[in-house]
Image: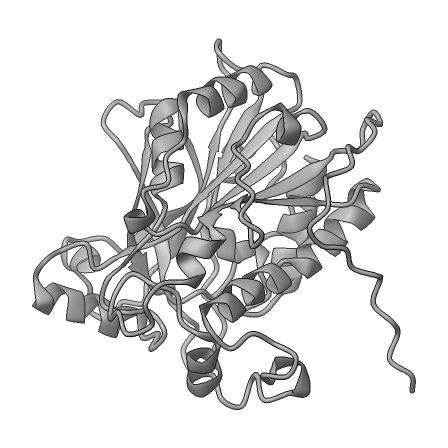
Length: 338
């Protein structure tokens, strides 16, 4: 059987704006990192860096022992892991294009070639749904500039827009080594160091847009006993006015998902659509404080300042790194067509 050829791939070219068609949403992904900063971190550093592809291959052996991931064809340093993230969203992009008729545009704050692209009209003009994937380390000090905040606020006054804001986990923020070790043993991922703090850019974006949410911890979802199947979310379908939960019971079994904590004064501005049960067999400061679930899917409906929606869930739910279920595919489709 002949393997079908992949579509031709382009790189390092200017974005070609997509034409507006009523009822056909245009989705764009924005990676908040500086690719050069993240890729060139000292691999001797114990904390706050991505794994190298060599480390990924070693820990996940033999999952990546295929010709396409060998050194002759694939980057083996941190850059390889960043490219792995890019590749892991291709299924989501394919499904979205099939559902909407529009290709998904992918942008980076600073790309491999050193071009910096803040969020402005160049990104927003031909976009109804913007997915902001907050995978920049705090140490990189990426901040949403006032001009970006203003541009997004203006864009959200357009009817039908949706900002998908996805700050990642904040593992090991305590200076206590005992607590860091407890968190590490809880999530159980050898590729994540004792301290890995993400999402300075999305945190500044949330502050600028007055989104009363903060990303905390890195929590391991509960699984059904004797299996590797994630326990279904606790869902609040009566609040799901956009149909995001249609035929959706679970998200990704990612071992260290953030809790989206509501900050003081959140009131009725934020609707919790899904809460994920936590693996209670692995001790963690969050569960020791009496918590059994964490907020994993939020919706902020339009208000007097904006006509658009804001949705919050982790970026790893749009990747294939931890498997793709029918439920996740349904979630992708629901977001693409909401």
